[in-house]
Image (cartoon, rainbow, N blue to C red; front, side):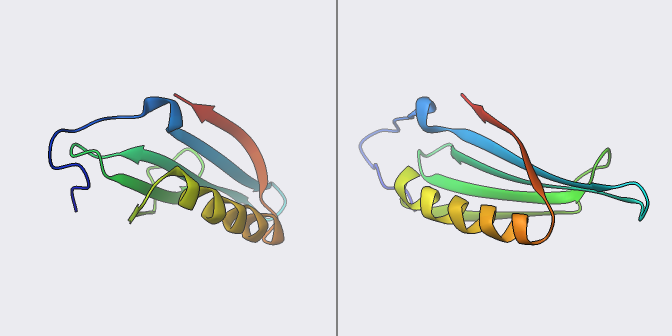
Amino acid sequence: MNQNPEGTSYCLSSWWTRYWERRDPVQGVARYYCLSLQQDLWGDWELIRTWGRIGHKPTREVREWIRGPADAEAIVNQVHRRRVQHGYLPTKMVTF
């Protein structure tokens, strides 16, 4: 899936990670959801989704190849709406 056969170019300024958390001590809920945009070794863009219990290793990780940062924005907006519907709050955004 290498989109740049002549050479690999990285755009580190477009890399980011966003976190959402859901905490409810009464119910014993402490969950997180993380979405990261980065490039692989060949310069292809991938969106990485991880989630699980706060303080533990990720329960699940899913990698999805996309065309670029513009495609990721539409996905992150969908994820944000869905996480908020499920009681998660955005906690931080990290850019590289």
